[in-house]
Length: 259
Image (cartoon, rainbow, N blue to C red; front, top):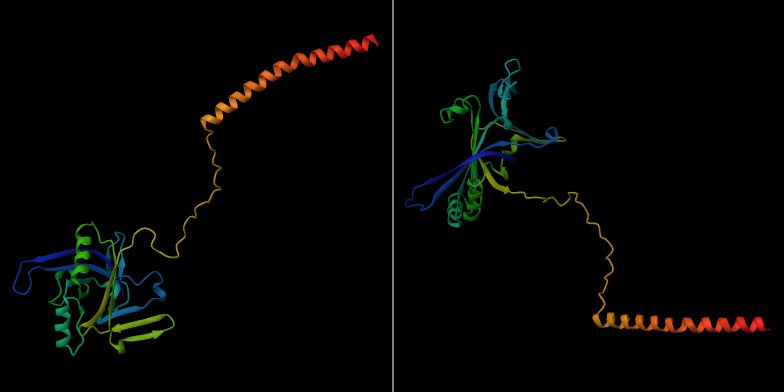
């Protein structure tokens, strides 16, 4: 499921015998089913009866007192508090040894409204908590991005294994109706940053390839001197040739008159 992180906080704890650098990250998220919500999977949790929610004129999410009662909550109406903490290979090995060879990578838990375990700020709505372990390097990468940006600039998704009897498939997709009775395993988590043009099918402007302009070579100084001398010689020849042609013309005219 794709989650949209809206904010987060980092908990740094004092050193102890178990851990020198104890640190956890908590992200406040909401479920984002996607643009084509009508054809995306529906996830409904719990059996609590309540009024549906709507947006008022102040863009606040408030109960619709005129609406018909609903049973269970859409996951999109539930705040999701996701905790991330660093784990080591030894931690995974120990978890696998305690759980029949399969390490527990995370848990997904649902709390109905007005339960003592729920923070009072969420008393009108249910709360979903989840946790997942990250490798030390990936944890540091996420922590650094979170503390150095005003708002989370990444996308997040987690894989939750719902009970088989709670999932129904249809031509519109998958519908999940889970009673929320016990924690579910989180089998994976993925965090992605996008920068600039990262889509392989996005349009881009093609560069116009122009014909290469001809290269004009600059004449050498020797060539310029030679051309200057040739020009001077041609001018001198013209000066010598002009009187000769005049004399020849005059002689021909005289012969013609005498005849």
